[in-house]
Image 1 (cartoon, helix red, strand yellow):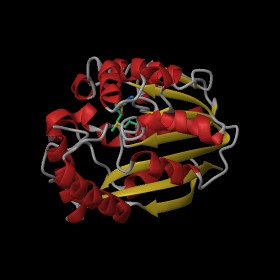
Image 2 (cartoon, rainbow, N blue to C red):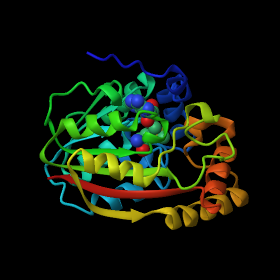
Image 3 (cartoon, rainbow, N blue to C red):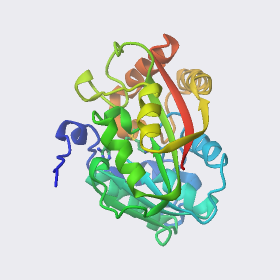
Image 4 (cartoon, protein in one colour):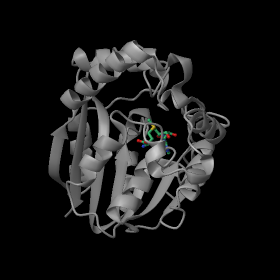
Length: 277
Ligand SMILES: C[S@@+](CC[C@H](N)C(=O)[O-])C[C@H]1O[C@@H](n2cnc3c(N)ncnc32)[C@H](O)[C@@H]1O
């Protein structure tokens, strides 16, 4: 069998030691008792994509997910998985290459009482450790921009979907040439950034036998979100339990470059749904 090796540069980019401990510490600093943490307390940190839980909820409402077996490809620390389990009655398996993220995802799910409905596995999206047709839904948010082999990424997703399975994505896509300023949230330099176009994704998915159900341009929503975020942070400083937990001190620069790319129409954000025919 063709063996895929996880790109260590990408893995290092998403390695953050003592992440769980840092999240707990920040919650304590906000006066939140670690013994009675709710999902709501994790809002702002456990979804690592533009517009966090708000956009995930909107996307999930686009289609009936009730009772689905969901795979979250590149699940991070599991916020979207917990939301789908808690609010949409799904059973969710998350897979991510980052060992630290998977450990953190498991601990956070246990803390908020969702251990039974969420499971987290360390692994590579390009070599999903599941049988063909295992899941009703495959869900992925802000992952493929780190994946060079797009054909393999989408064909693995299609393979593990059941006959009438649904694929849901929310992603950053390239519009023109990738001459973004770096760092951005997913890469400190262009060597681990593999931005694809929407057309390329659509061609691959169509060739795999998936049919487009719906697509939403999320770029304007992101621009509105960022201008509110920067305004608030300029006024008050960044006091939230936010995504700087992952990105560290360069977080404003990374968000700034992402915002610049969106404003200059070099990149776009889109969510959408495909269905296996
Ligand atoms: C920006 S984060 C998004 C996390 C999560 N989807 C969310 O929205 O909260 C990107 C995630 O993709 C994961 N990732 C990137 N390439 C991957 C691969 N080939 N296999 C598994 N996970 C991958 C990273 O480890 C990271 O957790």
